Image (cartoon, rainbow, N blue to C red; front, side):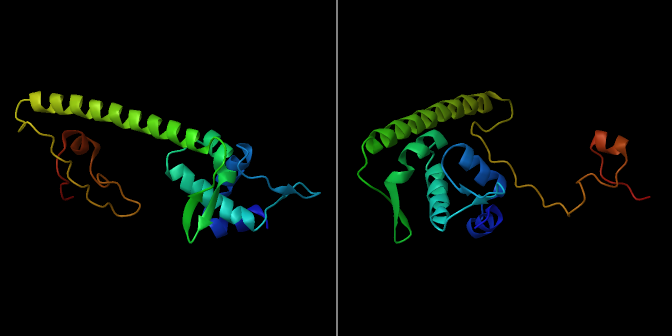
Length: 156
């Protein structure tokens, strides 16, 4: 199958499929005219790649462990491949460290919020934005001077 068909069947853009090929995650055959020819098994491979990316693995690690995973009733299962556990443990530790760093950053921001005059001492969630009609900006139809001053739209 050609790249467009694979893109439609997997829901992954052609550009991303080419990136997976550049990273060595997919290896389509090349026809005499240079077109990529994908196999049915590439549909499953793309699904595995997406699952491993969602687990936080970088493409370099996915390239090393992709052959070690298979589907088991819609669930990704690792096989007993040499180095698989080491790769997964390293990536889990990396992600845990990133989470810890983000937690520290969040605490620092909370401290700043708590020190702000007029704040209750806790961070309040931002209000959800109002939906904007397609093709319009929230300030469309207002004069530039009114937008700068934050004035409501005046009737004309």
